[in-house]
Length: 119
Image (cartoon, rainbow, N blue to C red; front, side, top):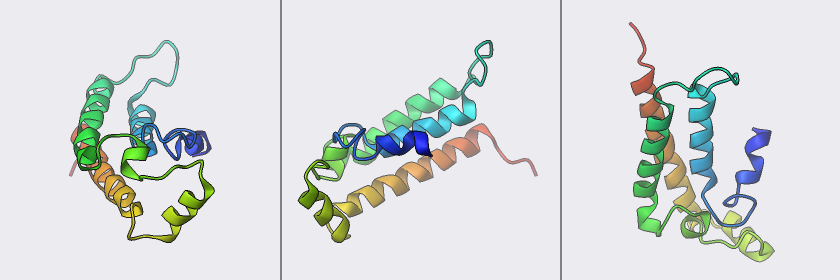
């Protein structure tokens, strides 16, 4: 978790790519990526990563893009904007909740597809 902390606010509070997408790709890499230099990534890692990026773009389309600044509509470097963002759950913060929920659902279905439970 600590390694992912700087991805908040759109990568280092820059408003760029949403940390939810970064986090989803980290989960895929952690689950399907190689763990030793001489190993190979799971054959589904790149396909799953690409599907996630495409689905994330669909989820965030209504907000204007995949960047944190598109979704949250907050300047993370402006203290007053950040305070307003956190104090108003009915403001643009609800956009983040929607994006996180939908991305999590998609990631869950992806994991279930790649690793079906055996009865």
